[in-house]
Image (tube, rainbow, N blue to C red; front, side, top):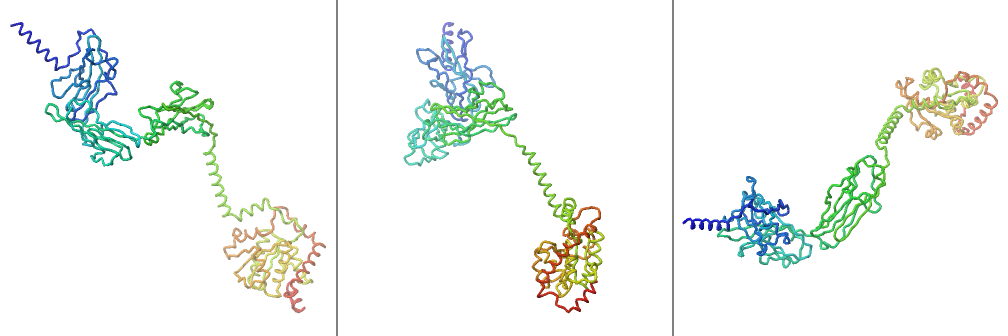
Length: 603
């Protein structure tokens, strides 16, 4: 009986060993080589769908040949977050199925995620590697979270096959295809669904994007399915045939650098479409890469993609130089790119930045402009004062000539203008401003003719001030004679004439000669009480028109009196002849008695 009992126990253990993976025994003398977690074999599956975990050890058939002669055994273990030790997979449940080199989970739940370990061992060798399983909640039929990327050139053919379909344990299955959440594959003869595959005979625009296949099958009476998404990325038809090119630094391009500051040198490269190939772009300093140079002042972060045109990429690679030195100008900075089709390189030309004191120049120009505007405003407001001040300090003293009077005042007699001249104009010019003033009615001596005396006084004056009024144009008056004499001397350049308008006068009443000369003459308007103060605009304008004087000792009278000789008399005779000739038809035609009476009155 004891024998049969032991035999029954042995048979039970043998049967159990066929359904459960054996634990790695500590009694075995073979040391198992642990490859850790395989990063490239991480598996993603939707919750409620079947998932397949392939053992990465079969990627090395030269080391581990899984066949009958090698006597290697494939074992599966699991390590969860709650268990630190590896637990054998219970293959007796319908959830786990070992099929060839894979472990199927039918269906997967959130509790099934974790680390799965596949082990190949025999009596002489042992190796194991872990595969991480991630379970995600499905977001709908068209959820493209889990997908594979494939690149297909434009106008080329390609066949889409549902991943893991060839490893399905059941032959009987059904495949449903979707393109961008639609089962419509209406592209004519360019694309068709044939059996379990999608045939693309000529890839056109609009055929790119996610293709989703849903595989349905049954296992042990349970309806199961799994979903796979393939993302078709179209690329250039010339994919894999072009050479890489450096766009920047370009020929003739100059990088301006500033000593002592951080500098970023940009390199732009064109990387043509290449399938399953990592193309290289790098900076080198004196034929050494940044890594080989090992200088902390130089760094080059990962390249960035500026443009992706169906696989043809324009990328940017930056070289950062901290605190650029003068010695760096002597170094060779080169940007290079390479792929399996070719190699291209370009040298960056550097130039030191010439410091331009833009802030200082800006501030200086701003201050200069502000001062200029301020001076302009001050000049516009105080223009007369500025002119008077300039003449006072830098003007030429006009009293150095041989003339006796500064001003000769001409006005209409027996009017308001005469009172203005005698009480205001004469007093201010002589007493307040210190000018020598000549007034015919006051300064002429008896015994001479009016015409000769008038011409002599006007010729000996530096300015002729004419107080314009309606009576100035009356024929046969002293005012008209003085006006015409002044205009004649004005044309000869021997005298300057200044007009003062005491009251508004219609210009049509002016004599013809005065209307013609008005264009070139200065007219100063008297504005009543507003013009009475010496600080008013009237007196400042008048001073500008009168002879410039400097502050010297008062010896002018003695000096000018001594020059009243033959020269003046000759000049007066010439002026008399000119005036008499011009006034021959229009000037005084009165009887001798009237002339003598006028002369007597003037004296």
